[in-house]
View 1 (cartoon, rainbow, N blue to C red):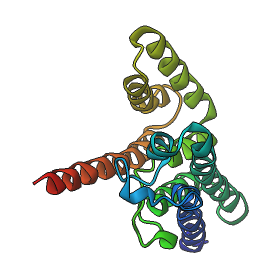
View 2: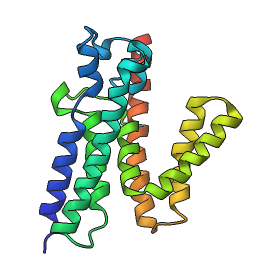
View 3: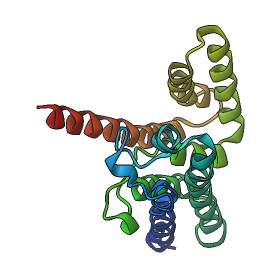
Length: 196
């Protein structure tokens, strides 16, 4: 049986879910264009700093849930249409990240997809994600720097995963994380161009 159809289904569903621009919608309801204020990233962190944590909480939830939902759809597609195709949940999660980064419903101007990645990877690898979270919490207690602890915790995930999963699974996680790196690099270039 061909895997093309199931792969297209998982990727399409993931992309459409990822394209839901939570930060843009939440900010617009308060008369703010989130892509024109703060660091101009239409994601949770900018929404939190611009609108406050209570207003930004739905952004956090939606951005993470759309990644998890896309990965779960990939799992269902794999179970029903392509048994044994382990990478369909990863593909769904990656497609959601692409949708978050270049959303269909927000003129292809999206965010950095960190929360969408986390939602997807927690759905796919809950045990490894929990262990990486423990690393993050310990580092937060020691370093007292939230952003650094989170970054190290996220990058610890594939290291932890390597103890449990086949290398191909770890490589797919790395590919998903590479997209985050690309989005941060694009933001840095845009900031440098704006400052020039």
